[in-house]
Length: 178
Image 1 (cartoon, rainbow, N blue to C red):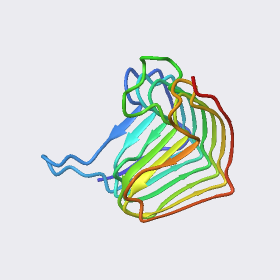
Image 2 (cartoon, rainbow, N blue to C red):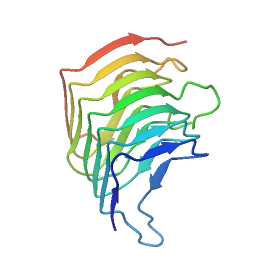
Image 3 (cartoon, helix red, strand yellow):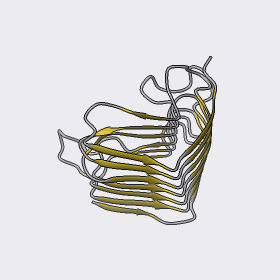
């Protein structure tokens, strides 16, 4: 299934995830090509974007006030998360999910992943969290004020199984911890 979210749409006040979809093993349902561009997503009760797709492009969006995470792309294929402005993610204690509270989460990635030029301000846990059996590039992101709720994370964190990760040109300031 190819999905294109029309540009310049505003999503406000979702009770859970504002944009959600993932590959379902039991039914065989799969998202094959998803693009979310130039949208405004605010006040999500869960994550702003929670997707798994063989091709995923999340570009030029403004995301604010997410209770869980801003962008979760776990298990996706070719992924580009570029030029997004993300603010005030997972700041309310008890409102997130135990496995989230991240601005950008890309674990279990299957193909080339590019996370570039994003601005992340005020996040409860990690700014960017990575992992998977793929080539992942994290370049020229600005992360300001992270670990507001938890103190065992970082601005950019990696997990096991990452085949090759290039982290370069990022600016990470104001790690808080509690």
